[in-house]
Amino acid sequence: MEVSVNIKKKIILISTLVESFILGGPAYGWPSLVFVLRDRGYFSDLCVNSDQVTYNGNNSSSDQNIDSGYPTCAEQDARLQLVFIIGIFGHNSGALLFGFIYDKFGYRIARIISSTLILLACLLFAFSGPSTSNLTFIALHLLATGSSNLVVTNPQVGNIFGNRRSTVIGLISGACGSSAVIMVFIEIAYNAGISMMASFSFLAGITVFFTINTVLLPKYKFPWPLPSDLENRIPVATMYGGTSTDENASGSNQTTTSNNDTLWVDVEYKTRLSCFSSPMYLLFLMWFSIIQLIHLFYLGTVNPRLQQLTGDSTEAISTYSGIYTVLYSTTIAFAWLCGIVVDRNKTKVSKVRNNDSNNQSHGIRSHFDDLQDFIPAFVITNLVTASFSVCSMIPILKLQILTFILQVMGRTFLYVIIAAFLALAFPAKFFGSAYGICRIVAACISLLQYPLLKMVQNVFADNFLYIDLLLVLLNVCSLSLPVYVYYFVLKKRPKVGSEN
Image (cartoon, rainbow, N blue to C red; front, side, top):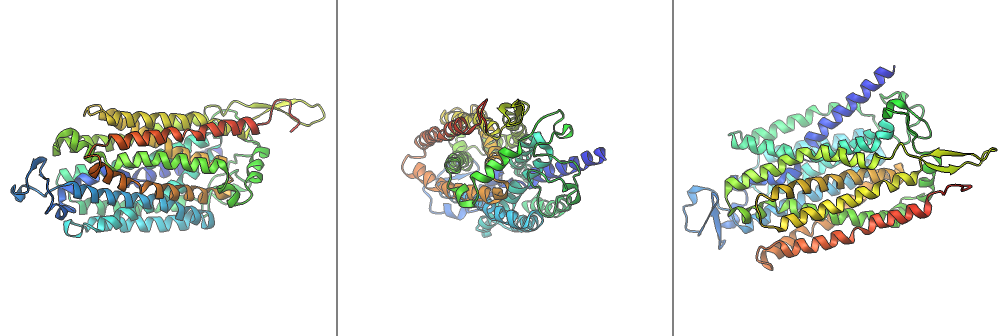
């Protein structure tokens, strides 16, 4: 029986990881996709009256032979940036939509809707062209919105892995982040002579195939803590959570969160309003919104930055944008690292005194110990984000590879933390809506990307330095979250010898 249970768990995990890797967030491979769109002449009509036009990577005046290639210009870059902004807004706003759908209806309904959106997006990309460039607004938005469901629901598979829960959540979130590399494959295929229509039609077929994962997952959801009759409702027979200890879940004898601590979360946040208006949630909302804005602004402006550093060499831009997007395939490794950072102390316990007849102290893993374990992850995310921002300000082309690595690492930590932290710090019954509201608010903040880009172009003469410095300052301000968590834990955690 145990072997059968472990096999079922592994099948669920592997299928979820593969699905997340392919469909969990391909929109974030924008630097590679935008290269293909520019090469095919999407929005090139905006360059007709532009003062400065580029053909095939060489700066030229508007009287150069247009037959040498489609024209590119700043107006085209701004329009493509707007496509990205609106598309990624769908990824965040979709998290709100699917968060509530997941809370209300569970996996199956949410997955059917998201698969339909991804399928439509792939077909729109496949049948779009330079004359129908505006279809990319709808296509990228639908692709990002549909994939957001996987980011919301798939990490919940971590619930069946006990004390490795945060690590598994990290792996799945990392797989979603790594799916940006799918756009690299599309760019490689395009350079090899395979059309966009063929590539996106193939991706549409994969979307249909992965509806099989809907059968593997429960109709509703994996609850947390897991109930004792779970094996009667989903294909997993071993129970975790509560005060039980399970060697199969963690590989060693580890104690999970006590029921008293779990009940504390439910008592602290009895309603959604009390949850969403708490200082913990509001500070986390601020932290996530700021860090995401920094990462999305950079992600959306990689090509203009590379144009400046390479002299607008098409070959160099293609090479470096390809390197950047390929590095997103390492997201799963950074996600695993983040999970290790959060789960590193799961074998350690806090000593609190029980009110039994002997009045003896017993080791119990406190809910507040788990909260405290997130502090290093928060700080590392801020430091890595600040480091990549500083590197991006230095006008050395080869140094940008380090910038890419740091940016991918920081973004990975960010999206692993949001799923793992909200699952821990607030009641499980509110997870979907808590996650969704966080993402939609952050999406609204991320709309600042466009005015920031226009400021770079029109106010600072295409110099990103001043905006980057502003974002670094906001990064420092967001450190108020780990400071608050530290003092919150210090105040709330039971003390040794306490009668409570």
